[in-house]
Length: 234
Image (cartoon, rainbow, N blue to C red):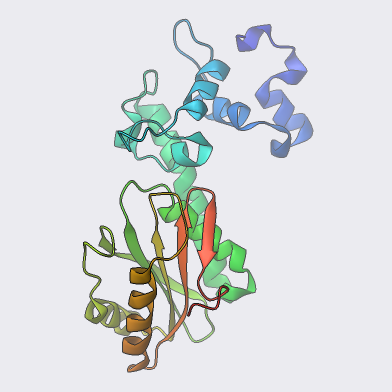
């Protein structure tokens, strides 16, 4: 249904202003960002179709699989969607970047483990919907506040070497007192593999030589995150 045919108090913008953003569905929030549809397709229909796109087993770049996948898409990924011009693509990418920066600012201002869930959400925003495996490190100061997040290596941990020496060098560069290791599982499961556990112990031992503690290793996937520390695997 075109927006003009929806009762004024039920239109996304008016609904948001009257009842707050939490009252809107994912499609309504997305429609506010898109603003207009294309010929023959209203903005709400377009938003709903975008959210219903799925990643197929044969092509990991086919679709976005919900709001999280869509907002984690790059500007180049969004070029494939009919009706998303440069302005709309830029706005969608900017929304996620603002969310990342807001969460990073919070983590830099307070002890990172005062809110473990915030750490997981932050890492999910960065890594969960990547089509390939990414290994990253959160570098922390003596008060466990975030100094920096760096993506160190790409590729599955069994196919791409994660060099402990490089992690040590970056820890020294940031004068870090502790780190949180993190990587994503594009397969969708967050259960650690034997390679994950072995890598964690190797980095824990190596970083201990320069008095840097490994506080956790977080594995993320769309909609899920696992803390190896919470599972007693660290």
